[in-house]
Image (cartoon, rainbow, N blue to C red; front, top):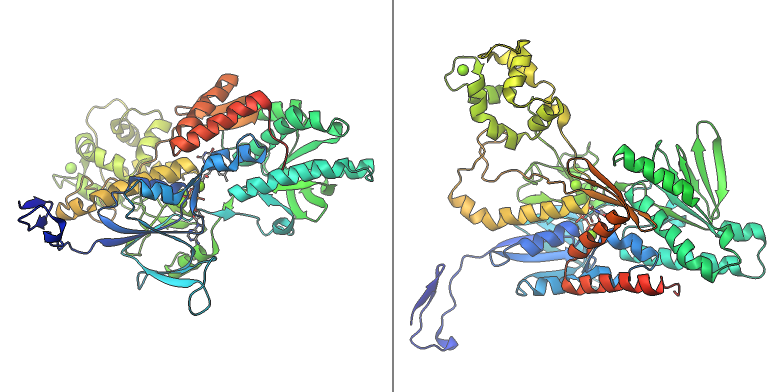
Length: 551
Ligand code: FAD
Ligand code: MG
Ligand code: MG
Ligand code: MG
Ligand code: MG
């Protein structure tokens, strides 16, 4: 029987495989994915891998569920429970995807090649270097911790970025307690060893400080009764408040709670140097002060990886801090290269850059003026292309563009008004102030991975039907809607089974019930049933037996 499916024709007069001629398919385009974190993994899970020849390159052969890293530092959750081998994820896709454990150290966009290096094997030249060709490159390499070149940080502080970091922190906390228990130390030395310093009052620093406090008060104080009163946790933040990305109510609650818990929150202090046993911080009022410490965790934000900085120089982005893409997540001036997650930022097109073009397109009757109706006809396209317009109207509590037009005319009563180009420019002159930068979160990275995969899945289709929904131009017609982030809310666990949450619509919820919401959301978001089981059983074990303090 002759069978045909999707251009795949088999010539056979029997059912035997030997008689089936290999179908002649056009070679599939090569997609290379850099990174197996939130962005890369979500992209791969959503990609139709039959359409492409896919290769994945990452120095880490697993995905890590980063929101639970702070829980690993206190042993609430085991490291194993939050990682999923990438090969297991790829296997579920039908095993067509190749994975190389290596890091990319150079992107060559002219020749569409990347240079990679393996740390676990060498080639005939005695190094582990190799080249990989791509048609499409998805850069999802995340960020590195930013030290702001503060002396001594790399040598003396812990970071909290990777699973290994969390394990090291846990071991180091236990070492501090054991060291402080040694018979030959004096009181001062014991105190120094039990002084835990967290630098950075963002979500990670705050959550770590809270989970360390829980670990100390709920578990370690019972095991080290003679020294538990010497423990001190300090949280140092250069700004005036902690958790500044959250609503004021959450910030206040967190600061009050930490105050009651005895966590020393030092806001307005900038750490300028970290020596082996003292940390130096600065404040305009006090000048430099040095405090002895036992362990320090540095968590003050993220920076760009060096090879991405090099890449940016090559493609004319030397003056930027973060690799920029357009709203379709394409790296500009760089054919076939996409970037998602913490390593990139979207450069939202400004209305004022395109204002004359928008006017020309909207002015259908070529009268040289725009009526409210004419503006309304192109409004959907404007909203899609320039989300800031909608945000601006909302911020001004205007219901429609007609309100904006009327207020530009200074006449809020009149029914029909028309704007000339100058008036149109004036009406929209402030909308670009509402351009929002997306935060460096797993939520953003995974939504971008999902969006990009859906574009890749439709790419062939789109090439055949190039007319897209977007008519207002940035760069001609587009086949896909630009990426749009949907904020689902953010949690800030504060310890003692209390969590704060800021949900869409600025809905704030704080307390024990929010902690349960947190448990259920993070159980649901696990990448596999295996990790979900492990995480939930870790939580249950902790409830019954407390945290494990052996290391
Ligand atoms: P990553 O997930 O960091 O992945 C980068 C990948 O690239 C890794 O696999 C890495 O090994 C690989 N890589 C690195 N260099 C190279 C190279 N040269 N070549 C190839 N591959 C490379 N976000 C939330 O939304 N909610 C939270 O509760 C939350 N909590 C967090 C807690 C902690 C402790 C941390 C550190 C982060 C947290 N985040 C949270 C932020 C979130 O983890 C990041 O925003 C997210 O991981 C970004 O995804 P990404 O894919 O861009 O980068
Ligand atoms: Mg990634
Ligand atoms: Mg990750
Ligand atoms: Mg980003
Ligand atoms: Mg007109």
